[in-house]
Image (cartoon, rainbow, N blue to C red; front, top):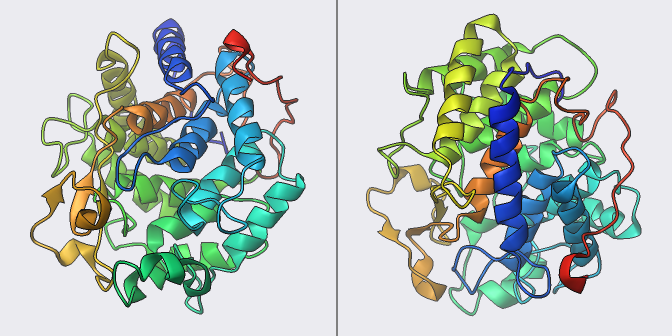
Length: 374
């Protein structure tokens, strides 16, 4: 996985991944979509792209088959733009479109004409500062201005969106994004986020983007990030956050990915603790307890970290200024799947890192036809 170190968890990790895969496969609706969060109805495109991209980390089998089916659904859909948005009724944004493209790249489908449209869509969100915004006014304004007249903060470049897009090897402006990531890193090693209160998420994506490729050299930015992430992992293996003081599987999963990207012997113990904790914390149904809190800043709120109070779980127009949770546990579970997939040893996995030079080409499995769903 982009040269990330691997951990010998063997059968326990395999069993956890099998249970999680079955949970995710059976969580699809009758048409094959994953639906999670409830901001403006369920986030159909959002959840399907993210869960699909996570399952695509797995080798041939039921998980990757489900990922292929997710890509087939997404490539055949079109909302109000060439990109993909939260759901079919919402304008496309660069963040969710990046996750659709990450899914396509993991399945070696980046040459598909629909993916090509997505790359152009994401590249159009590039700002002069080298970052990527979530929305373009010319596309999103007719929808957003029903709620408020100005959305300057949502049209600005966002670090967490930039980290997601920087992982796209087929994106023509990728090198500019990598330069921007080096500028955005905080002194202690983490990266900030706009839509997420947990910095583990953008930090893992940034570290992986900066280490993608055939080189074994770890950039200093990634070494700092790995050190920060290792320090976030407690003695019991859990990462504790403001919204999950008892431990967040979501944050722990992304902290684990960051440490693995750093490939340092010093981080190996922290990574082992995190992986063991995640395996032990799995629920009986194969999921992990929801902990992927996402925040919805106000339309002119450029620095959501400065807000002192957030409401919980509001919907529709009232969601502005609130944090929302993946109540169906799909986002959290998919995050852990992607992290544990990266701990697999060469003996237990033939999967290589999606995207980038040096990856092992994999033929995509046929879509999942269970129950004639497809």
